[in-house]
Image (cartoon, rainbow, N blue to C red; front, side, top):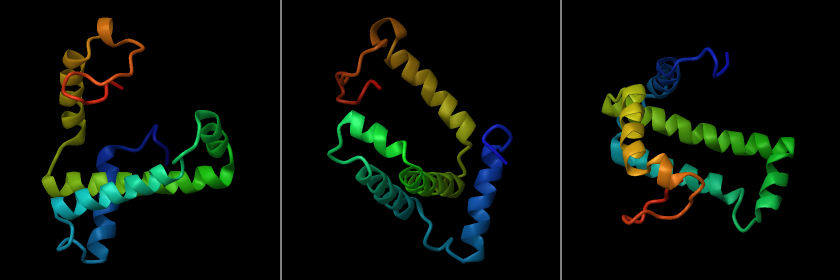
Length: 125
């Protein structure tokens, strides 16, 4: 399987099956899942903390580091998918709606090549 031929629904099912087999649904509520996602994202950030861009590029160029970073990304994705399962969110629809909002918030004409906070403090990237 690969990204090219795996659906989001299939990935959501993989995560749900894993959670179900362990009887973890009781613990998988939006609060706990959001907190767990944040923890996993922090673990992902640790791989790059204090590195220059050149050093970060070197880290991802090494197979062992790339595998470890991939595992952290997979952990983040698993929690995102589990959260979507619990909230009964259609991720395709949700992402597409958000991208429409982002396109209005960050018009190409004023946002191309710009990485600075918008007036609300959110990153433009």
